[in-house]
Image 1: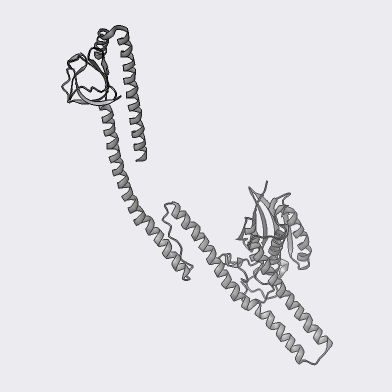
Image 2 (image 1 turned 30 degrees about the vertical axis):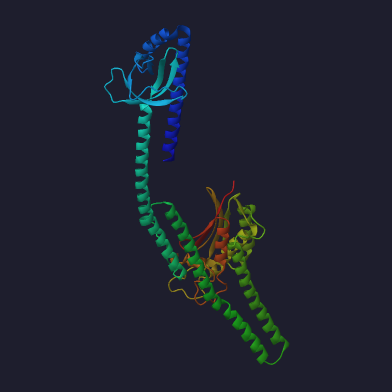
Length: 445
């Protein structure tokens, strides 16, 4: 509407200015003709110009008001007599015209001898233009009104309905139902994109809450048991006959249990720092091949002592941006897990004690695959069921229900946290037989 009014107003102003300029030009031209040839020459010029198509309006009258020259048949009303008014509006009929009277903007001059000359321009075109503008304004108002009603219906019935659904889902989530998710229509609009992001956040929150519950449940078992053993040993030492050897054994066992508890708490603190995105020493450009070579060099004698076959296949260079300490810790955890839990499955009818770790094969490899660096630790042990691949990445989760084997269930959790910190991922795959764990990190140029 503003655009229509702006264009109409400025166009009307421009047309009025053009009309006034045209009349002023005619006045100046006829004034020069009158100065050069008097009334006779003025009448001849007026007659000649009146016969031109699209000419301006001219009318010359004598002292009695009779028309003696021009293209105006008559005026509707009397001839304007006041030359002091620059522009006046009159109604007129052209010579030989059967149309209805029209309006014109004119100037009137009084000449010697009682002659009057009228010079003007038709303003009917301007009136028609104003009518077009008014019609456009009415149409604009009608269109804007219809669009406003449609917008109100759209917002009230569709958008507000979706917003109400979001509010209702949020209320249910606040009441404790973390399984609720915002509805996604699939249209890909702004609300859908917002819902997808919020759903991803809710998924993460639910996993964290579930992880917190699992941590609480497992802490009750993993920390209560060693603390109970500590207390029992101290009580047993106090009940027995006092002896330096007995006390020493009790204290040494207490120190071992305390060291295990400290290791668990240190692992929890390290995971918390990594998940918070604050690695010790910051991130720098490092070579994953050098780290893998150091880990392989450290574990080769350990594997040899346990009768385990340990092989490594490391590429020449694999640059990544990360923390040397954390990547070393993650790779060491993977190799350590393979040594601890990578027992090959027993053959049918095989007794305990047979098929020990001498049949275990562990392979460490580093390779560049496109824009990724893949560090893999694979074994031919019993592996992990595919259904438990996601579960074992949580804290304190151990597949051995009896929990007689050493460990705290935090190794893979730390590796998973390190992978996320380095914008990478951790994949567990079936090695047929055994398990292959792939730590995938972005490669830097």
